[in-house]
Length: 160
Image (cartoon, rainbow, N blue to C red; front, side, top):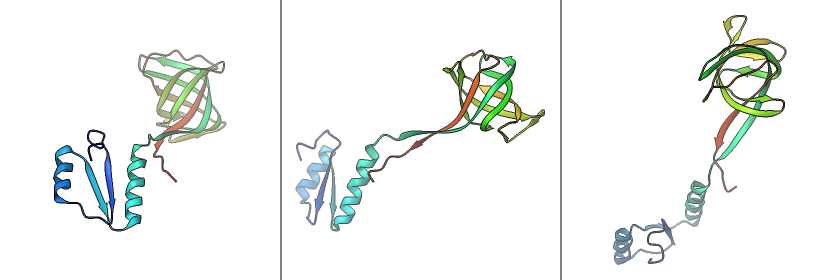
């Protein structure tokens, strides 16, 4: 018990009784004691506790690519531009890497997509569209820049 104090440690017991003196000591020292009668429950609990310690994995999924054909307005936190979808699709709320000559210069988020001056849910390969892009800092897009669209999500790791 003394080794477990202050370390956020869990003490597991299987098929044993916890004496009242040990129960009081554990409560006083803020040490968690878990007693199980079924071994599978103990193993499941230990596995869940270890999985909770794992950092989630960041998974990015490529969605599409667009080439900038025109830049209409540049503000501190927004850029309005137009272009042609070269691959995949473009949709609202996607993230995008802004690339110039193969080098990433910024990361933005698509706040709206328009096709023929009307709000569009998605625009697909071969189509032209207008985009409103949210930025964290002012960026200057140029004709010929590429936008690589993707999603990013946190996936909880498991022990298998």
